[in-house]
Length: 165
Image: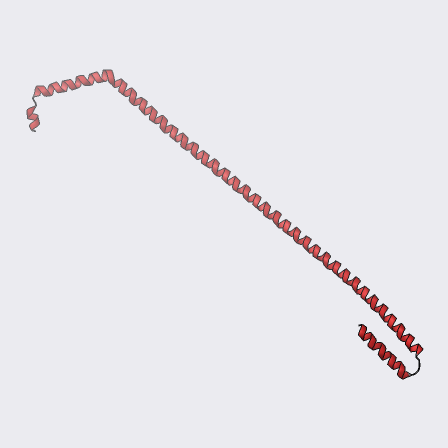
């Protein structure tokens, strides 16, 4: 309140008049320029906001494209992995079948070989038996003396047969 007492009415009137004069001068010479600068600034800000929205939309589109590509790559990788697993199973099955066939061939060859060896052994045994039988018969015919001697020759023949077997 003391400040108002220090000011006189003429001073207040002069200040108000100066204020309006400055206001009219500013409006006439600078106001249009200031409004023009403010409008330009507003337009620039709106452009930057629009550009930011466009960049955001592009970023979201790129993100969607990236996610789609990642999804496609994952699907393709899964497909390749599944195909590889199928091929591996098929190869393992083929190897197993081949091994089984090879084993059967080996068993069959072994059986044939054993059969041939058995046939050879039987033939050799048969030949030996015939040889021993002929020798025994020859001995019996040469020494045909009595039943006791015949029994003795047969016993010798059997003991000789046991020794060879």
